[in-house]
Image (cartoon, rainbow, N blue to C red; front, top):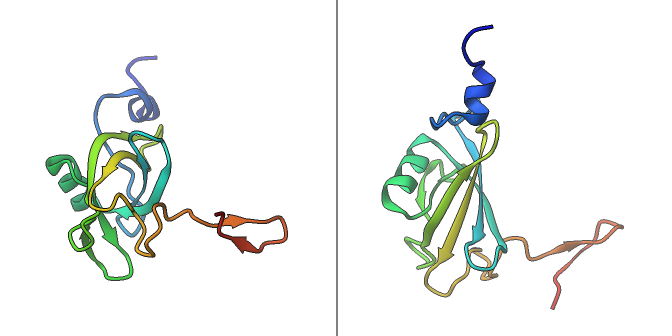
Length: 128
């Protein structure tokens, strides 16, 4: 058996080859580089990923506005990227970031977009 398989290259190779979905998007999760706290989930298209890597600041694709989104350009919550990782099959990005401004990440004013707990009965609560 000669050569490496495509899946081996995808999983262990040194070339970034993101697997964008039918809409041209890849999932992205941002965590706080210092605390590990999950801050937010968003989508990236090729341009958002390219700008994130080129500038060192997180860029995403807003599906609701159908436009490139430089996180923090309006709110001041710019996310300085400390490290960018991609998962095994290259269809999800993990950004370790340091939020600027007030240190938040959510448009609601919460530090993290994941501020509600789901109870077994399906009700949502915000821990104090």
